[in-house]
Amino acid sequence: MAKSKTLYACTECGGQAPKWQGQCPHCGAWNTLVETVATPAPARFESVAGTRSSVTPLAAVKTRASSRIATGLEEFDRVLGGGLVAGGVILLGGDPGIGKSTLLLQAGAALGAAHRTLYVTGEESAEQIALRAQRLALVNAPIELLAEVQLEAIVAAINATSPEIVVIDSVQTVYTEALTSAPGSVAQVRECAAQLTRLAKQRGIVVLFVGHVTKEGAIAGPRVLEHIVDTVLYFEGDPHSSLRLVRAIKNRFGAANELGVFAMTERGLRGVSNPSALFLSQHAEGVAGSAVVATLEGSRPLLVEVQALVDPVQGGMPRRLAVGLDAQRLALLLAVLHRHGGVETGGYDVFVNAVGGVRILEPAADLAVLMAVCSSLRNKPLPRKTLVFGEVGLAGEVRPVQRGQERIREAAKLGFERFVIPNLNKPKQPVDKTELIGVDRVDEALALLRD
Image (cartoon, rainbow, N blue to C red; front, side, top):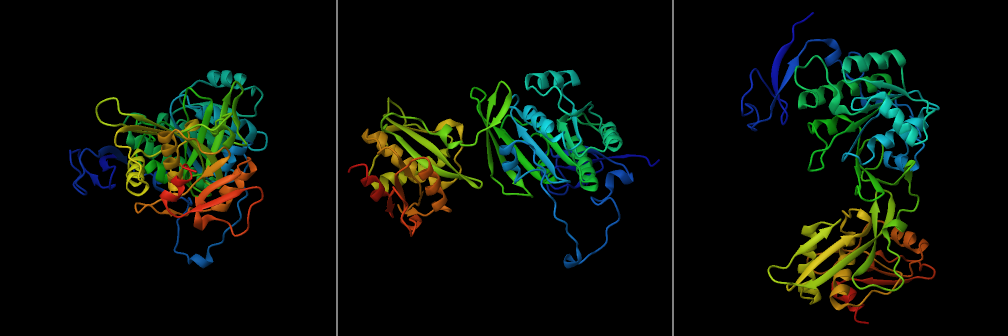
């Protein structure tokens, strides 16, 4: 058996050094060298195909249609792009207690009826998993459990049982004896994830990793972990709320930035078929400082209420606080509001919030934010059943957004009758029972609050 050799690899550039030092000799980065073991074992360095590869023209490569495997959870399938793909590797990250293990146990229970499923737990015992299954009414779920953290033992169990679906909870607890570093270290996470990914590709197994997150919210371990896998999902939500959001950050088999909405109940996670109803407050009458925007989350329009509170400064510097929106974008919009809308907010504190804990990342909410701020400042509510969307430029123009007609149709289904939108997003054919107000400038939209 060949003798192992200890090297130190850089997490930034991948370069190696024979001994540890503070600065990488290749890229110059500091404190990036981590211990790794160079073992000339074929199992560690074999190709993804498992055999020696040869140069092949692209046109000569034969492809086969891969059918999707439904997980039994409609919202989870939506985020995945329609379901699981054989040989796919998925990484699910989120805060502690957010519901990662619950979601995968529910999905495994639904999948186990038609596909052999192996649930590998490295943080809990098999008895603890069984207790969770009792709470979720999944006692008789056809899932096989393995409480193990050693990579070699996990691979041996996979080879012995030949499952179609494998859940690793979590990848930070798995270690290989080929490395001397502790479980959860950069070298261990990278090596274990790489070997399990190669195994998934060679045998057509679906592997789902549960990943820990850092205090900043990013998945713990080397960034290369997200590059190795096919799909990266983030579990989001307020622990004090029952609402849970699963967002796709990367997906080789579907659309990125897709969103799945769940509600945490006593029986586990339940998909929300109409999430817009959760994000819209039911006001009996119009409320000042409130505007509804249609934002896109993946392939689905989502209606969210944006609330603003403008209050005179009580001494000191005025505050700008945004929850669920970009705080830097809010400062920019307030400057546009002053310059091109003639509305001064320098003597006021401005607080903006996206209701329901959702994060709005696209600029289509710009016009709704300005309308909500101006509505709160003037203490004049927008008419009920009014929808606002549009991107605002630094010159005060209101720019069109993508898929505007889909946003209008979604809002019309929920009973919205008045739409303040960019002129270029107005549909050529009128929409029944709706009033479409197209604007080109910010001051045109703000003038509607003076009517």
